[in-house]
Image (cartoon, rainbow, N blue to C red; front, side, top):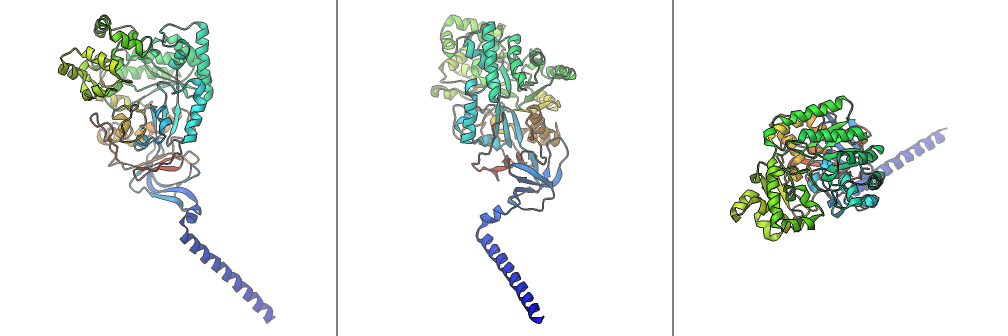
Length: 551
């Protein structure tokens, strides 16, 4: 009996010894191999002790956030370890910010890093004011190329009604025949099947400005069949802004799809403080009768577009070469100058909106010989040259090797604050990613909104001017635009949602970019995750490209 007991005890001791040996060997192995320790972690990332804003407008909670396989899996007290641990004590943890009016469609093909976007806390961008950088038939291949090369942000894009028009009519301003309209609609159908998010129009630019309301409605009905959105750079943003918003609403209401007014503004000094509330009344009335209409805006008092926008629409017929030929004709110049004073059918007078040529500043000459005039107003350049401002503008446009760009000082601070308070506005930069930080890029538009728009919303309009609460500002950059664009499981910190995250220091968050230094980098965005992958780590891009194409 004693022998049997001794054998049993000896066996148990050997088992315990073996377990101890295995445990010691495992500890030694893990200590010698940190990668194995990481793989043993329960979560990919755990964010600790942050002030978590859910994105829905609720007050922050003090919590840990655990992320695994690209999604939020636990919010609250997280006991398990993460392969990467981030201490967010004293920082805010927000859903990644969404840029509702982006211009990155072309540059992402050359560089998918989108560093200037991510350093602002932007994790998702919706592009396509001018459509896709490829025709409808090439969208599938375009999206596939972005996925294969990798992009650091999530990206979706609209397809432009102007693209359908040019594909069928070229630059002609005439109305399409019934057969031609069917071909335009077929082009939109192809784009929507490929994953476009809806239809855009840019109605101050030719040839989009040539489209009638009824034509826009007919093509928009195709986008509506696929659940698309109609988003518009409306026909006029000055004295006629209310009428132009009404047209956008009519298109959406009759075509049966939601309406997004791009970069909402009142670019008309006599209407400052008046017309923005008139826009609110029109939108609220439409929403009350069940029309899904909203708007986005950038938070600067100057807009930016091509200098050619100062030239009446009819002169653009036939394309760029035709415009240059017309600008070389003194008789045509005389006519154009007259129309700049009296107006021209189908043309929004952006010179008047800027308060004259003093408010129009050259920022991208697209010609080395003219680069010396950059950052000067057209009025100042004309004074130094002893010429008429219109002639200076004509020559700069004609001599540019590409699109000559200008900044137009034409909005008021009061109207920005008024528009921010509307519950249905979101935030869009009207700016694209840059191919490389610190390197001049022909496709880069030197406006501070490209480097500071999202942080400025919080730094200026929450912290400094108290226009919005922090929770409301974050809602406008997260759950609201995600809801507008039907982005399932984005824009919120919620278990099961995609883990797009922006971690920022509220006290130091700053938009450093100015009109004189438009590419200065913002401060205060410390960590950014896209689909659960760390892309900005302690203020530096990791090189990761976990972004998804949003269809």
